[in-house]
Image 1 (spheres, rainbow, N blue to C red):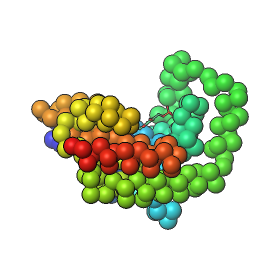
Image 2: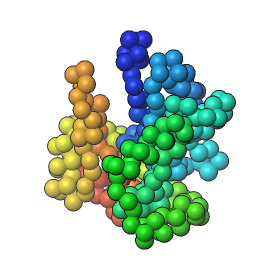
Image 3: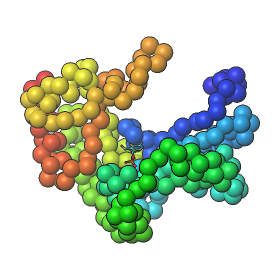
Length: 239
Ligand SMILES: Cc1ncc(COP(=O)(O)O)c(C=O)c1O
């Protein structure tokens, strides 16, 4: 990107691990972005709600604040991260999360949140605290996702152009034709719901980066994911 564009930037929004691709921004890139934030005076806001859904227990994805601390930025200046229970604990309905980072930004965010947010009911607060404090269920959930990815990818192997992501719980598969028609026909013939990739992004420079892809969420129990993969296989064989 050219200097004039960086100069106009006020807020850089990141999502890593990414929804829908599962891509992870490497640490060296995060450090580079922090240098650019200093040079051009902007804030980096990172949505890291998939940070605990990964495959190698020894190698979790590096987060923005971790990269900042490693680079000696102990004040986390210009950086804020957003996290949520919804993926980590499979509790999307609770709307429980936290924001962390640069104290000056958090101070202003708190003032904003006071007027533009609503308080969480006490019973949600109690349940949230239990979920945030406990790690065993998160490790168990990671292991279940690992098994689901292995099983589903084995079942889809050779019939659909799809790879295991770096992290997250989505498969981001290529479709042989337009993604919307593929999604509609898959539902009509096999009762399987996926999301057309073009619905997840908008056209830019004449192309929609999500076109020709579908997003599949492996959030259902293992037997349902396997059944869905078999149906997709059957569907692909009829094309
Ligand atoms: C990238 C991303 N951010 C945020 C959310 C929503 O988080 P919450 O359930 O805490 O509102 C989602 C859920 O789909 C998501 O994919």
